[in-house]
Amino acid sequence: MIFSPKHFQFFEEISNFTHKITIISLLLCTVNNKDFIAELARRSENSSRDVADMIFTLTQIMTEKWQNNDSIAIQNFGSFVIKKKSERISVNPVSKQRLLVPPKIVLTFRPSNMLKDKFK
Image 1 (cartoon, rainbow, N blue to C red):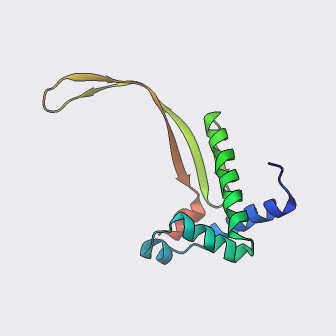
Image 2 (image 1 turned 45 degrees about the vertical axis):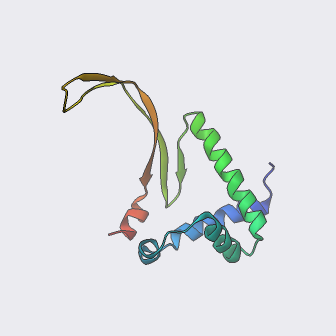
C-alpha cells in the first residue's frame, strides 16, 4: 500500500490520540476493536472503513518489522522490543526433575517515561 498525506495525518492523529488517553478511561473500561475504530474514525473525521484499513496496514507493517527482529518505537508511547531468551534448566518442584527449556523469542513492551508518568 502506498501512503498518501492523508495516511500520515491519520498516523499522527493516532499518536495524538494515545497522548489523550487518561488513567480514568483505562481503569473504567476495556475498549474492543469495534469501539476503538469507531472512536478513531470520529476523532479523525475519517470513515470507519478507512480507519480499519489503516489499522490493518499498521499492524501488517509492525508484524513484518518484528519478523525481521526489528524494534518499533512510538514517540511518547513506548517501544516494542524483540528479546531472545536463552535456553535454561527448570526444575519441577514436585518431582525435582530437571527440564531443559529451549530458547525462544518474545515480544516485550517498554512504556515511555511520559506514559509511565500518567500512571503515577
